[in-house]
Amino acid sequence: MEAFTIHEEDLQGTPVLTVQGYFSDVTGRDLLTRLERLIGTGRTTCIIDLGPCTVINSPGLGTMLDLTLKVVDDLRGRLILTGLDRVKTSVLEMVGVLAMVTVAPDRAAALRQAQTP
Image (cartoon, rainbow, N blue to C red; front, side):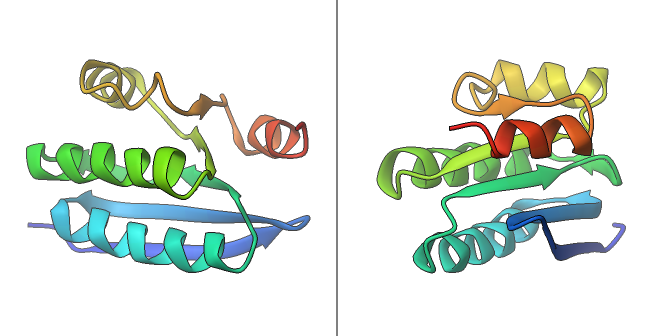
């Protein structure tokens, strides 16, 4: 199993979390912890870049759905996803994630979406 990394950066005041490598349930839990911390500081709109993510396994999809529900419903946050290829789009749509987030074709578009209320 390939390792994962989550890189955090700030783009013009908007947090961007880039997931690289293998997205499993462990990745999802790490991502949720980071999102909770960011939202707790008042940064309620976050961009998640899945471009460098090579695979999302089944448990990873489950945690992606869980973290989306928690961020959007419980924490009243807003997620913008970018870096989606055909396969990622298909599986995230199938589990219901895409109905709750904004999808942007690239980082520049994601940043524009983040700066639009």
